[in-house]
Image (tube, rainbow, N blue to C red; front, side, top):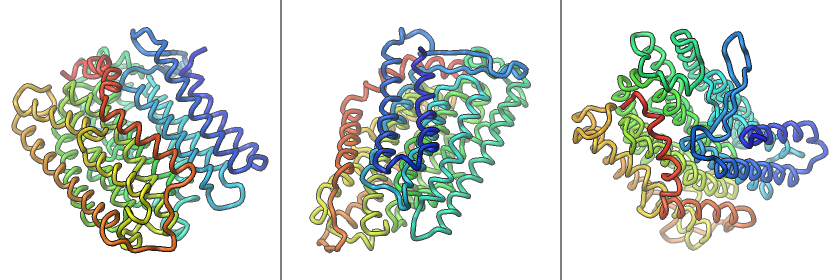
Length: 504
């Protein structure tokens, strides 16, 4: 039995069962079913990867789906997709675990919410495993509708109009972006007669000319919305601010990675020539996003909006790594994506805990001196901030450092074909400025909330129940990747040459 196909089917079946039997399932049972299902998916992926002989794609399956269009049910995972798949399953398990002690408002509402999380997990596994462009698109779109319901139905209870507006803006931005991406996929099919990603990657160096560049531009535009790359990030802050904790964690840890993964798997691998032409633009927009997002963070008073803008900056480092078209840049993109999922997931879990207690994430309302008032929560939040600003020894450090190293190599003329030396030098300086600004806004937030003379509040309550377990899991994961980055790098590095291919 193909472990990858089972990992794709299990959450889909769980979602269907939860919807059908929602009146018979209690909130706690539904949350535990979602947690167990996600852990089963993680184990299936891990066992399948360990059993792989290292040649080609693990658990590859290729069946004709729509013969007239040449569409295949073509799935497989390699060193680029496996870390993202495993991280997605872990995050899914944690958000369902959080619902055990913090069910959403409403009678028996948890089964529906967990069912939507399972649909998102199914879609994410499908995107990361798809080796057919149309299959990639189908799974890419499958995740959009459930996330609209997560934000619009279970978002900020104090602002029903605002949460629906944020959910609709998220949906409109991503649907329009996906429409551009589909145009690019159809153009690739018209030029080559195939939608198979491995086949296209093998002959990608012959895809040139105006139509190939057109396809690359439309694909990059669609993926840039989901990443998001500045200035197409405008849907993100409101979506995070109005989403429930479940939605914020999924958006940060999973949804944004669908865009960065697509840039690697589709744009760079399938269209290497046009990718070289677009690399300077991608790199420039990524670095502008790093700086602009950091400046925006310095003005934020809401903790969730601050973390949301910080995600734009972190994705800027991922895009910069991709734009260098170097091995270290691709490694940086994958590692930083995984690290961002874990670190920002931890940040949003803690921000959600504070918002649940105080009814808001406004730092002025949260007050000062959280170290004295809620020591465990404050320590974990401070730890996550230090990891996010790139403190050495924690997971956030390595992705940013490798992206900067890739830009430095390009500036010295030793890099790949993505950036010229002059532009790379400018982007390197801009990214370093972003590092300084990132440190500034996180340290400012720590000073305004965690430190200072305590201002006791009736809702002061430290981490409890599943909150402690979730924090422990993510703290260990962040420490593990920070102290032993080879755990991820050893998996990623063998697959990098196949991604770069003709883009070198």
